[in-house]
Image 1 (cartoon, one colour):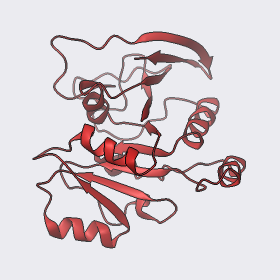
Image 2 (cartoon, rainbow, N blue to C red):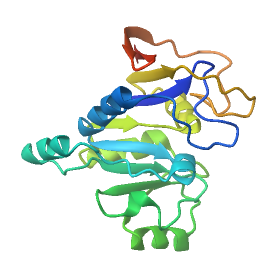
Image 3 (cartoon, helix red, strand yellow):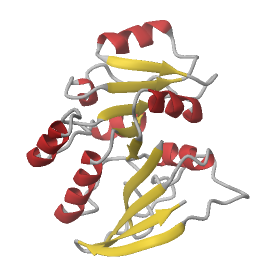
Image 4 (cartoon, rainbow, N blue to C red):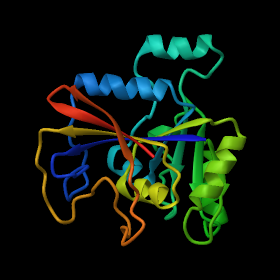
Length: 219
């Protein structure tokens, strides 16, 4: 599986404010770039924190791109994947609206009634890991289900987990002209953080987009 992480952050490395509310960091040209990345992917993945904060659809916005996917024999929208170690996904989340296949990744500690509720809401549940989602195992299961390119849109806890397991192949970061600040504001890679064996991607490209830049890194 080829894993592509995409995120937008402020110049001081924040994904949103300390309130973890959605903040517009990029502009229309970057939104279009992200929509193309979605259209090129087999699935789009986020952590449950992103679901709770933004309630995203994770679908392709542009009708021509959806049509192009259908013409090549793919669903109009990529599948949607939620990593939820803390069983917080609401059954009325937009990602469960039936516009695309939705996978819910949980740990083996997830209560059976929660799994049943999510399945009734339309999710395909994959359980792996004792008390946290085992990302290596669950991504391997997704690959076995035909997902060859996975786009990850955050948040910081999920991105750190993927980096920690060396599962990331490419990283696109839009850096926008905004300073957010705050020691408790989420960053690109939250979690425990590295104290050794720091990942060291290679810079593949830099492109000016809107009023910021897109940094393209490869691992």
